[in-house]
Amino acid sequence: MKIRKAVFPVAGLGTRFLPATKAQPKEMLPLVDKPIIQYSVEEAAAAGITQMIMVTGKGKRAIEDHFDSAYELEEVLRSKNKDDLLRQVEDISRLGKFIYVRQQQPPLGLGHAVLMAREIIGDDAYFAVFYPDDVMNCPTPCIGQMMEIFAQNNGGIIAVKETDEEGQKRYGIAAVEPTDNPRLFKITDVVEKPGPENAPSNLAIMGRLILPKEIFDELEGAKAGIGGEIQLTDSIRSLIKKMPFYAYKFEGEALDAGEILGYLESTVKLAIKRKDIGEQFRNLLRQILDKNSEG
Ligand code: UTP
Image (tube, rainbow, N blue to C red):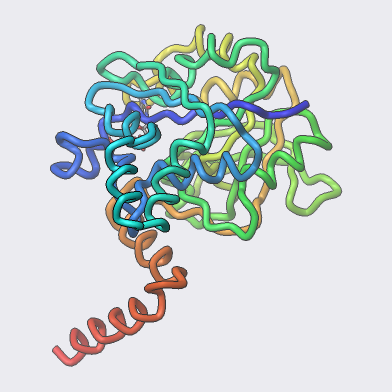
């Protein structure tokens, strides 16, 4: 069974980045020179996903333009022989087939956003969900690693990482049983932000999921949870009782570009990894820090 479709919920208000997100989508803020959302779409495409379903909302049109071809810009780059830039710009619209569905205002939560994709997922038994705030810094695409696991263990697969007490307050946490594969666990329950006293493990749920289409029935019937929003975790929780779900400790690191400190950390980590500017940027950081410590 192949995963062909991915859902990208991008309709949120991005309040943690105000005022930057007053008139532009959070998902279009740049990490170095690429918008946050492009990292997830590239990851999906690299793993063979061909249909990119964006759940958008008010003020998110820049996302549609970004993944469309840009005829005039391409002509200008061509006439100036800026071949590298031309290729980069053209490649964006070739990352897949882009399908847009709108979540009406006010956005009612991540679970509600995913539900908007129900008709587009149609009869596909399983599909991928990407939270674009989580930018994966992995040796092979995180969703590709999960698709390999999925090929051997049909069921829902959720990316997890080991976390600390702070993370147990911030993330959904999975209750698990071990399997023969040290990176793979059978999920018995998930709890949203339990805190260290109630956390069933140290495995935090990250923004890559392979979900069965049965999730939509759960979401249809879901009531608003924390913050008046329809939480995806609540629907996964009910589905775990009916279908197999696995937690996969992926190889690599998740960068959280969805809040300010995580965004700055992501920017620095991605910039120092770059072949073209990495070395210079490291030196620049050292200089800035040395100057600061001198007072
Ligand atoms: P977040 O909760 O991080 O995004 O949701 P947000 O609501 O935009 O951020 P803050 O808390 O106000 O700063 C993770 C992803 O889910 C999308 C967001 O756009 C983001 O990409 N989302 C969230 C939706 O599409 N719809 C929603 O109702 C909520």
